[in-house]
Image (cartoon, rainbow, N blue to C red; front, side):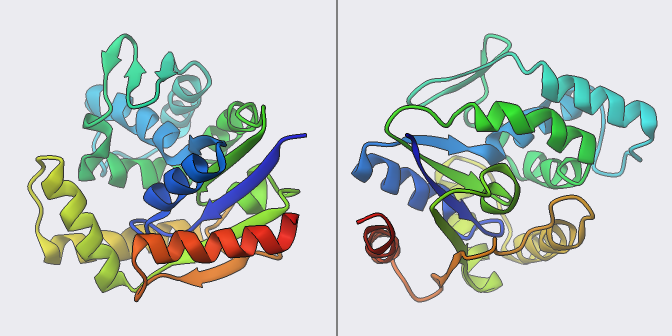
Length: 224
């Protein structure tokens, strides 16, 4: 039986780094569910769409088709889409903002649901996203909702972007985070919220190792 740990939370709350560290420590597989939405967003942007493009029925159908037929390969350190390495490209802010908008389209979420569940195999899985515990893996024994203040999240996102070679502006980042929080928490389908029974952890004043340690303690209390 595969042990599943879900890690949900808002943008730049540290989910990715924490989930990857947990997976490495436990010897589990890792699912970055946000990357799937970013891949669909990347295709939309390269098709000439913008964040202001209204999603009518035709657009939603196209998004669902892209989601259903993603020609993607995940390796240890790279994400390959249609034979192109998009590992860094999908981390751009424009892609993230478009992904947040696309994530509100229920047909896209439905198209990606079984693909995400298919990652649950082997010894264990750490899955991070926004509805991993509430929708994708509702029966997971260990559910965590990770959050932090918007200021701290903006600082973390700024450092991530600069380290990856992207330009960034703190004021714009705070505004973008607030807009994405608004979309994620108020969307009709699978809104961002702690799953039932989730361990809610505020990492505002915690380092990465401290955050991981707290979750490992919680994990041990549940599965021991």
